Image 1 (cartoon, one colour):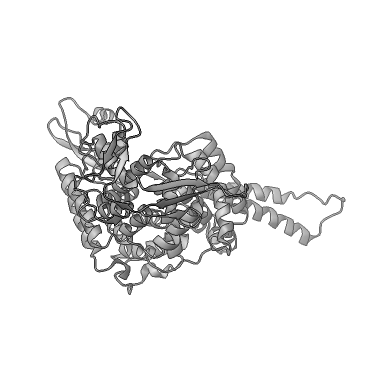
Image 2: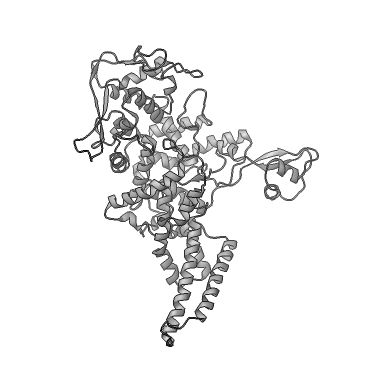
Length: 607
């Protein structure tokens, strides 16, 4: 198992994180919280309490490095009395210390690969996922490349998908210039321009001329699928661009104005296009798109990252910035975007800001709001009206009977609470998070240190193909709802990923060899899988299961059958046979507990 640098969590000599520059991420987090609190006060909503330390460590590990923490890491964090231990844990996960550095790079390369080109590819598109993943992991996130530079390299990419990771963006969305233009505005600006491709938008300001004036920047881009002479090799995609002079012109390819030529005169925000001399069209587009004055660029990525960590963006859906879909918290979005740009478009800095907010660190428990009791209403009728239990109402208000005209508190409905970020949203683990977390839970994450990254990638690909088939409904969009299915349940319960690892789990070996009380062993299993201690009820429940299994084993051991040859076993052979029966029963019981927790819905969600 990976030997994590647990002591870093408790260290008091960590720097403020030089990779973040001079930005005060804690002050920025506080400012964001103030804007969120303002909206909560206006809505008269009292947010859920802060998450427990156990909730927080599991959540932040999954969100930043894509895997659950080990039992040792959870135990150390829970024991720590440091007032700023959450901030220091975040710094540790974002640091250059191993193994966190590699885990961070791998996780965020996976996230951005999906954001840039989705999960599925058209047949023979020329997409090479290995090169874009390598570029993201080993260049962008290994070097903490500024986000604006990352986007510039993608927009101006030339060459082939065999040699250049950024070219894969064009392979996925090209070769048609209008398709590439629509994808670029959606991914990098959060603006859906494709609706104006063949006609003026019916409800928004976009005109067909606006779209084609923008798409003209891709008019000099040539993209094509190249089939190698060797039929056994996959085709690749090649992109090139001819230098331009004078005006950029695009030809409408659909709708009533098909065939009409449109000259690029203004950018999407109305800025006048000024082109002089010889220029590269996509370089000019990238310059405008990533400029500090662009109204969407920084806000889009900030909104996308906020959505990733909170389960919902300020603008929702995240790729639908428009006048008719205003942000829920415009001041918070504007501040985050300006702060992000002022700190050099540093993605690690942005992550530190978001994860240090009180908003991110809320529990997924109940938010509440005041309710005025009407004549004749009782706790029972109020509970029925709000589709909650009477016990929940009593927990919020005590046992006193409500009086007409008085105010009590009722839970805020989840959708309403989450729209103002009054509680943490339950989010399903991605297939990749689930894959690595299963390995971690059963003590097999040492495979991540395999000498051959290719072998690990092949192993992961084989399993992810099955996970994604079962868990994703649409290969081009992010999953927003967890839909449990019978095939998924069967795969999780019977899949060899779990069963083969359980049989050789060092965690089970540790449990069987350690001199622990049964309650301590159950506690270790819970820390290893759910990142929390068990409740008293769970300790009792699993204690009974273990005792029941051992009683059955004792009865079996007391009646060991004679040898098959009819002879009498000697005393040593008898004791060895009885010990094996008891040990096997104990091992199987712990294996079943571990198996049941890994297969629980609690394991498969970020809380």
